[in-house]
Amino acid sequence: MAENTFPVYTVDAIVNFYRTEVLTGQEAKQLTKSDLIPSPKPEAVQTLYMRVLHFLYRFRPECHSMLPLLENIQYPQYHEGASSIVSVYICMRQFLPSCLFFDFSLNDLLAPKKQKTLIILSAIMNFLHFRNQRMKVVLEKQAKFKADVDRLQSYVRFNKEAEKKIEILTTIPPEQQAEADELASALSELQATTVHEYQEVNMKNENIAEWKTKIAEKTQKLTQVKVEVTNLKEDISKLKSQIVESPEELKSQMEKMRDNVKNIKMSIEQADECVVELQSMVQAVGFTEAETQQTYGLLLELEDSINNTKHMQEEVPELLWCELKSLCLEEGQLKRAMGMKQDKESKQNIRKQKQREMKEQHVQDMLGQCNQIHQKREEVADKIQELTNETQHLKAKIQSLRDVCSKETMKAQALFDTLSTSMDKLHRQIDMNIVDLNQDLSIMSANF
Image (tube, rainbow, N blue to C red; front, top):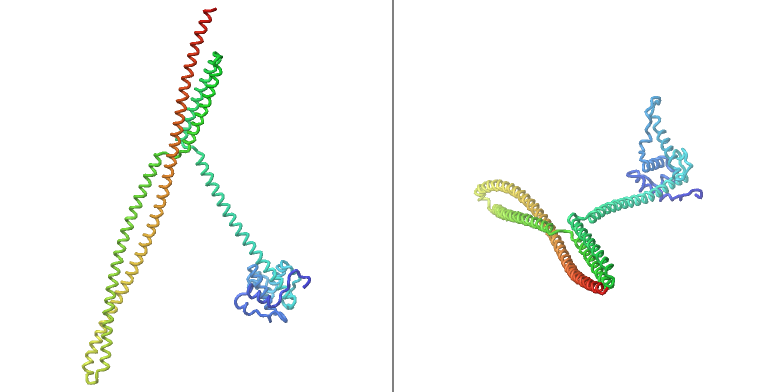
């Protein structure tokens, strides 16, 4: 007990464990405490070991008795008993070291002892407990790994979708590319004209030194105005780049939406027609049910009349028996006729019941189709509502962008007008200054 690395269980615990976990059917019912104590039975111990091997390695008990098909073995039936014990012994010698039990002999199968058998069974029981725990851990890790793999696949799919969306957003449409090229060319032309004007102003500043300060102040103002103009043009280009859809695309989308609405209305009308047909069929079924109830009432009346005649027959005296005999014969004929009629009516009722069930099934199918059509109609209406909301939002956004563009263009036009008027005034002043300088030079030359 002290040398073992595993606990030695009690006989009750061992019997309960092997009856519930290892053995099945009649073997589990037949295993008792007396099979192990005070002296273990070799047959019970051998069956336990065979079932353990079958439970762990799927090695069936009948396979232990099989012999190899060799030519030199004579009388193989004499070897079957010994071969099964030797096979179990070899398998247990290979298996028990994994249970940390290394002292297994052939005598433990043929003449087992109580203490050693309980130790072996406790070692196997401890190994099975450890195996169940490890299997649970492995299954949990396997489930976690599957969940991680699924999550990784979903993340990879989301990354691919995000990359596609980024490519779509980064690519510029050809219409906006043309507008951007036009704006870039206009800006380059404007920069070229401003550079040319700067050169002319510098030349005039070199020629006229006295007016240098005034021209410098005005050039500073001009540069500020030009910077504002360039900023405004850049804002205009940004606002134009934000405009994604053109009015032609919006018109085409609205036309598609109108066509979808027309198709939905047509489907709704067809569904209403089907519902009207189903209602008419249901009314016909109601009429047939009323007719069957009437026939059933007539049959009940006939049965009451037959019962009354029987009662009268019991009360009639013996003297009138001959007269009543003829009536009984007529009643028998009437009964046979009624039986024939009832058989016909029962057959008709069965046929009507089948037709009613078929009609009800057809009605249920049509109602299911109607429900599906109504669901589709609601889904399409929701989609149309979403598209209308998106179109309204886009229209409002486009209108706001147009308003902003118009305001910015108004500001740019006003700045351009002020710039042109200031430039005209500057040119006039420069011309007047040149004329005055020429007059001064002519006066100075005359004086010289």
